[in-house]
Length: 294
Image (cartoon, rainbow, N blue to C red; front, side, top):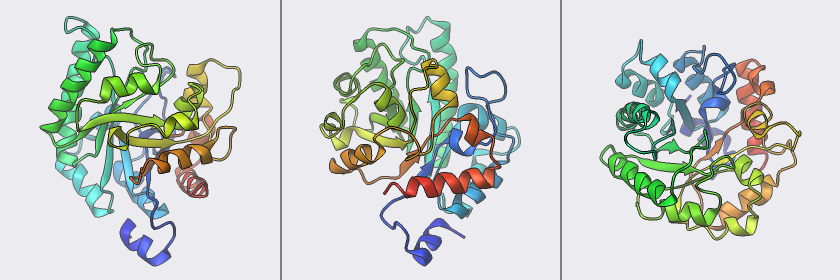
């Protein structure tokens, strides 16, 4: 059943749409730096069908998973799967090292991935491509801003937007003001907020209400606590479903709604617990627990 048909029948949360990010809906995978397989062992159609069945109206793809799927399916065939199940909000990720010097080998590798993501964005009519600085590479902020504007110009030619995910491991963009300075120029680019990163960066709810709605590309929900482990360990293995940790998820939602955000809400939970569940249970639990926050 298509998501819009199901919503009409149930009448539940008609004004709230959820987007399942890649790591949330991939099943038992290994996000770096955990060694192993990043692509999902479940077929795309299996995941999309189940996501639509439980209520998700958006779906995310990680570059490694996309490459794996494209060994057997064309982008047109991938697009047809999303269309068949009424999934029309697509996120593509992830691009790093895009702001380094052109002579840097890491930047050159990023350019190859960028072309893949652009090609997929156009074919799948993706809402946005997620970029950021997971590895914590250093560069002048002016260079980051120039590079971000270039990404947005290229993305515009493929009909998509670019979201800069701010995170505590990024030494170049350490506050909302700095993020706004980097992303403020392009009309098809902006900030991507994640409850996890906002909480770890100790950004206040009041500060969130100062964001320009036109500069906000996407919002992701999750929860967590301070376990004492490294930030990388906590980020990839100990996130929690919204409402199950110590973060101010309701305050986060209220603050973002206050500035007028009404697009689908992403759910990004990277945790050993969720990856260990059968995907049927993981998908349903994620959807129900997240919707309970609204």
